[in-house]
Image 1: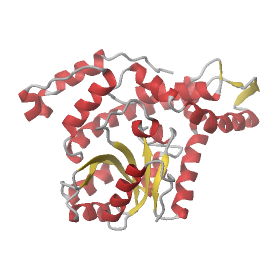
Image 2: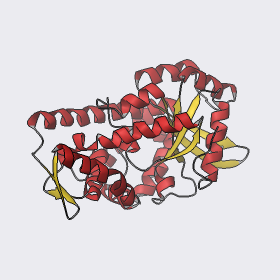
Image 3: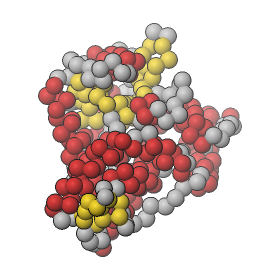
Image 4: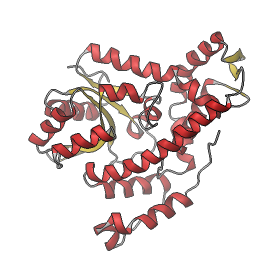
Length: 318
């Protein structure tokens, strides 16, 4: 068992190690991503964002249930994981600590599929091409495996981003546009400026991982350049490719709606978490009525729809 963040994230490493111990030997890796890693305006109550890669869903959830860390039936969690992976759960350290992780739990097989050439949606792909850090690994072999899968996802960026690129661009420009497209592919509580903030926090990451991608594209003839560090598409994306990825993001958005419904079943205390996240990212104070608190599935929809329609966004249509 190894910690690979080299002590930079001791609280996250401690959470990940405890999670692995309670996961009945099924946890293979724990990846850290998101606002705590990027330091994009998290507050003291912000959860760590984990991707927890397991080799057996049922064994993992049984382990957590035995430690009283699940709060949901194992059969429900296992069934939902098979229908729409990953499940998102809350994991707390306990012992009076306020440390919490929001964990996207996914099997190795489902992780590879989500980051491959034909993903079912963009939920994991859009997150894993950003900066990530391994905070716990079962072995060096697992470390090498996940790095290979993520490297493959980086190499595939040019394929699904081509319909959204025009003119000349640098690796950083592709990273910036990538985040705009990914944020538009989900229903999210963040405003337009959030994608810009997230990009600024990891501009060096995108420059580092996307420069080899564009260089390889230039060798293969997919892109032209570089000229003073800038590239251009050798030919515009075909109509078929535009339709394919437009359908992909429409499907991804539909599945994102399904995920919100699923999170209500898998994520303990999801309502205060979502409200706090929306307030933090938009600067708006949100006061729920007693009916919205008691029966959010019935009474919260009008407010949620109004919130999504009125927040500032910019389209990403190819």
